[in-house]
Length: 387
Image (tube, rainbow, N blue to C red; front, side, top):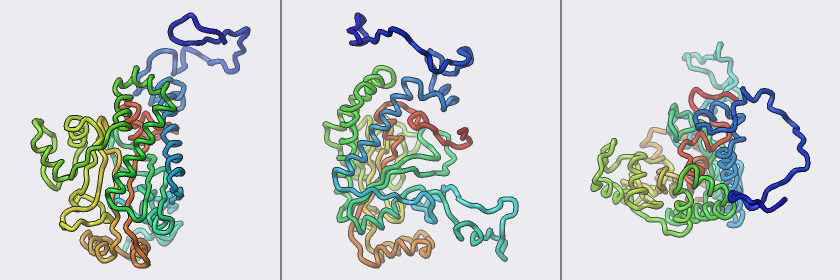
């Protein structure tokens, strides 16, 4: 190891001899040759793309973020709960779930009414891959107070976009004796901790992204670490969007779900930083969110960031049994499927809150890499699974 006369590095390694352990069989057919390759090209060679600078750096940052999340949770007294990947419940109520079955698809068993007889399936009922561990996590939150889960989730959304994966990773904390504002504080604090960890521990990789991918990436993280998050009510956000001197693809009106273009306007143009939007209309949110006294909104919150839009979604959960049952009736839900969830309110209940952060979107935000398929080792998307 000697001081380098060049300007690109401080030291260089001088070798007395070199032994090659694994030759490239044919350099002419090697897909990852020593030249620039587009991200689209690298996606065609997922098993080899980790050898490139950009993917290697992205996965190191992903690992740093994952380790920082676990470290934060441990230091703040959270218990890691391993929630099930196979479930009989649809947490989000959207119905976009992957079915799990061992039935013979050629000769499906039928009931006398001609319906598929799931009683003959492996679990004796319909089962799916989980979209979220939240409902099961609430059971342990009501016993252990501060819990979280961190693992894969699955969405059968037939969306071929830069923002969607069929298999993704999520961190979901759940805290007892916490309202919506406690929830927002925890999410902000966690994001600051993670961004600070990346700046301190992966400064070399972040410098690479700043030079090669997104010159604003480090400035964004520093703003997360050093600046306060702007809080605004959903109704105020709608008013600001309606006043904006900008034509949106989706017209803005109260009661709508904010689209990506609206979220990014708020975070990028109106605030130029992270925004916490609070108290959404109940008709666009899930059944388990706590209803506010106005009868129109629920105690839900999203954190929006530049370049991505929503990066955190959460709420205070509805702990009042009668209110929760009434809301399920409004939505014509089969309460028998959620009887165990209602038991959490029947047999001792406390105010509690939680949120979810998609790991891949967080890595997109941190690195500036625009496509979610480039921040996970082996992306699973509609009509595409090779490995």
